[in-house]
Image (cartoon, rainbow, N blue to C red; front, top):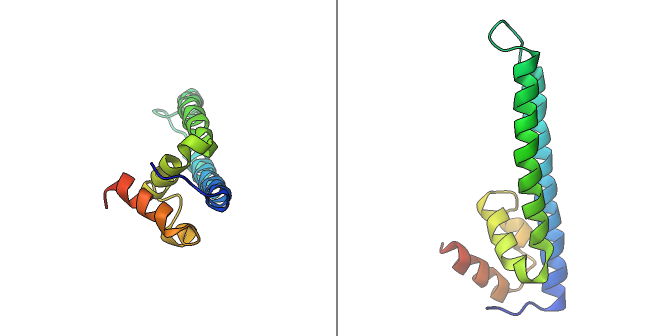
Amino acid sequence: MVELSKEDKRLAKDIIHKGILHRHAQWQNELRKLLEKPLNEKYNEYDRSMQITDKARKFYKEAMEMEEYTRNSMLLAGLANLYYRKYVTDEDLSDLSDQVKQAIDLLLSR
């Protein structure tokens, strides 16, 4: 496994935080759309509440898993996962060392 320099660790954590914030914003937009969905006889307040509760429960689990990405032992996997899910971009990763970028490529097998 690749040993990250202090600078790469700092950059990786900053990038991971940016990716996590991107996912939180995306989830909030999903929730906003759900709240704006018109009610009718087949989709009422109860149904909406149950959907919101289910979405919140699933997102809480996802958010807690993403927070683990900032542990030093999870930095590369976290970067790779956030990149794969398009929460961070090539531009976000551009300041990382070539060694770290290669390790991410290897994890993604791209």
